Image (cartoon, rainbow over all chains, first blue to last red; front, side):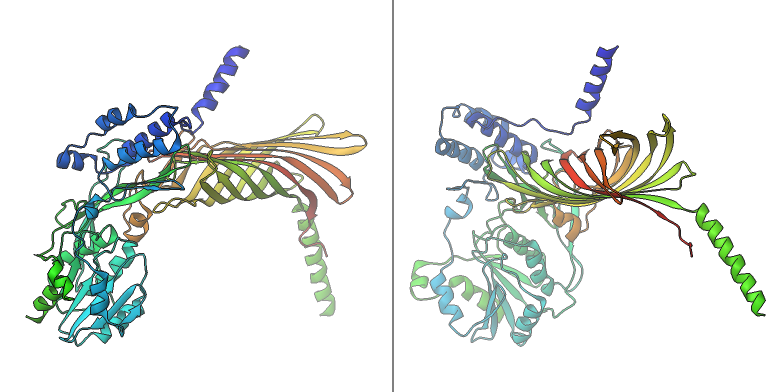
Length: 334
Length: 267
């Protein structure tokens, strides 16, 4: 009788513990833990299988043989970094104290189509700064806003002042080239100044379980017009391959608006909202967890094409001419 | 006229006095500080367990009329913990406030030296877990409301010419509701876009097997004060939306207990 009671109590205690099985803190354990975190949380498996044949189980087999418990930390990092690169995702990173595993081919393999020398030439020295935004009016009465990173916030009053300053301009250029993202809410706040009515701009969903296809229904994302000063005239948004994450989202939103044209190169993408986790050895891993789509429910993970594709040339750059800015000016003048 | 007023005042006084004796409440109030270990798992933030230590501040207030079997138990528990993963590189901070309120029915046994109580507590909890390394999912908000069947055993005895009171309280889960993001849902989606997806989840003793136990020993050291030492174990757990979370706190407690009566209208 006593024995049964002990069994019963043990069973109740076992059933009632909410716990997980931790992997060993060995190279093999860390490899297994990382593969499993991605397997259970990453959000683009199906899309990337369709795009370039990604098979996460095959990736396991390919890299498992490269891991053994005698390898050192640096060797393990190289293997894990290479494994994550198979995802071709700029939002997937492995962080250690001495390096960051990354996949940056989405911009490193392409022309930059941006020059900070040219930016200095076009901005001059008497430009204005408000939050993360630098702005001025060109000689042909075109307003120019340079927004380098959405990690730099901007206030509603700052936006009011900038738009008020440029209110007599015939058009506006928003240059987000090299903007690697930041806060979605900052991008939304800026975009809200160019929307005149509640507008469907994108869709998003999230994972609801460990399965590769466990997703919530797509939720429509609307942008409300700002209740503050808004811009009604034409706008050109300048993009290049380094426009990523929240900046890519800004480009997607602006692309959905009637008065806006994207000029430059294709954006870099990065449409998965990232989340983080950690490995037994303390390394952090970041991965895309919630996919975002454009207003037509198309993926934007690998970026979106501009309306007008323009590239910088060495000759023009040597003459101090930014062909992308000049194209935008031409569009806004006509 | 003056005699009439005096008579009325006398009647009022005697009525209030009678009521006050009837409504006399014995209040036992304990205030304790606890220190001990904390173990955190939250798969929304990390697959790893985080272990460390923390502080708790606990007060228990029990109100009972001597002639009645029902008593009211109110408890406040606030805790703050700092924990690390096994590699000692990642850190999670945890804080929570738990409020318990409920009614207990009592039985006196063995010549009043043993008191058994049974009843239920309502537990309202607010808290957070903050992972200092994560970027887009740095924190988890915690909020739940639980109904917990509760039992208390209190035993009074004398030793070395001093009066001791040993008390054991255990509260088990029955049902409740809690807040939780969905498996891979971001807080941006919940709070900025207002997209709801099973974020208020009904729980039972299977999906949220929480239990809490407190063992204390009171030693009456002087006439108006009693020293209390003890142990508090609070095992808060949940398995909802395919996420797993537990916050285990074990605390050694030290504090004081005071017993006093309230006679509201004694003039």
